[in-house]
Image 1 (cartoon, rainbow, N blue to C red):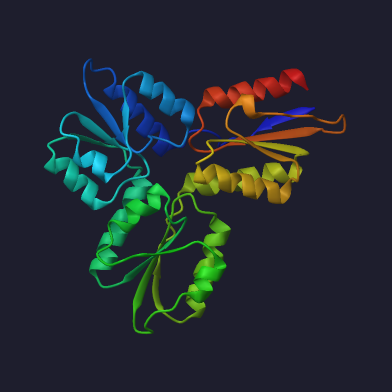
Image 2: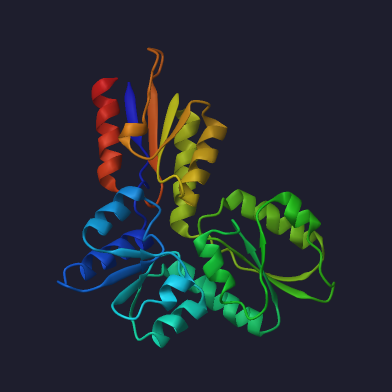
Length: 283
């Protein structure tokens, strides 16, 4: 039996950069370190940082009551008013916003200032999407499904700017944009899905199409891992979604020739290696 790991698995550039920045801060003894939201959607990493004294600030109210120390902004980014609050409270700010996300903030701020209504294709309530909304000068609209896109209406003279959550499914993004284009609005479309996401999804699909069994590793709250699971499931019926090796309950018949493994952008290499080695040794 062959075990194949997708080439683009585990930490993407933006997540690795954010995690590294927090660990760098922990080297300064006695320093109060906070992250605005969990640094990544991976409980193992968050737990390890907590043991090193890193505290998670969960919302704006908690931030408003913080007046000392350093706040690390995670790769998902935050709305403009969070930066203003950090400055107002005289806190040190370590900005680990992914450059791909920062680019969306710039587009949204500029185009909304130019009078365009902002449409974000993504998952409403996701931290990245919440951050993007906070850079629009006017209320932004979030669209996640074909049904929502079909139902969308606005003044025919209104100009639109469409952006995407960086981890959104590329094919789905194109399908939703097509619906908007058919409505005849004046639209600027910025495909802001990051290259790493596109590449990861393409590789996972190709591997799932050949595999008898697929294992997708990632945090339960990880949007990009959930999308990898959905894609793999569409090609390979026997697809498992796990967070760590402890979640893996695998019974493989003798007919299985190829087991594919992929992992979300917030999955540490250590966990991927544990799963890979376990499958290789035990089956």
